[in-house]
Length: 390
Image (tube, rainbow, N blue to C red):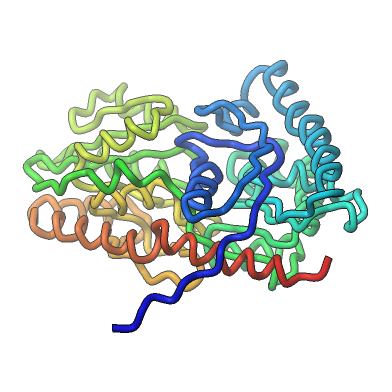
């Protein structure tokens, strides 16, 4: 039997900027944990925002809250840019900038390249797209929206490598912000999967327990899900539990006002451990049903969580994946309530299918999206940065 080839050591990394973490933004902090576990030496200079902090919620808050957020993102990152350039005079190690990376990158775009280290930016999904087109903030097509788009384009072009979540999002970012194709990578996101991989298999009983976790925005197709709950009320073998909040929360509130008995709602945000508990108690997880446009370009964190926990997933047929990743064993439907209910009824009447789908999903996650897959991609990314001329 041939011996496994020994991999070269990972280069040392520095992390900088103001970063997001917690159950809503798990990628950066879990990426660092995986790299450290693989032997990378990491100098963490990030000013991490509190766990449970959500950009969209702060941006819809009272004026003092918004001003404090914008000041921290802009002027805190100006300070981070000055410190990074100062450190790089003696140590030009590769620097990873967590999401939202564009605020630090914008300041660095005004700095001569010789003063900057090699930069790997976590763009994840576009700040402009999420803020203006997805949530309708700053006025769609208005001056502020166009300024944010130009701001993000300039910032992202400063990075040596830009990381996004899916192949479709990679193409969109390249076209929208005029990025160099060879500098943009679609990589698997990183989650804390230890507890999820320990969630035991579940044999469904009636009623089928269906879980939705997410932000109530058009991306997730709340209109589709709300109507699916209403239509499923005619059946006694499907029970829905929603976890989350967002701009379309009034549509979910209407379900409670109507007194539907097949629906419960846990409003607000819960910890990663609580999400794992909710996954352990469900049979099926609902994905994204927002149709085309942005909804077709994402593979959200909640589907990583569901796959790792070994739970069956129903999501819309229009989706995208990290580069080179096979299609997960999802139940794929059109983004309309009739299809959602129809396929939930099939699963409710076939417990073995639910169990097998969850088992296959966990195996898929471990092979394509877990720690080993993530590290393989990161080795490619770091090799790309290391070979670029200064």
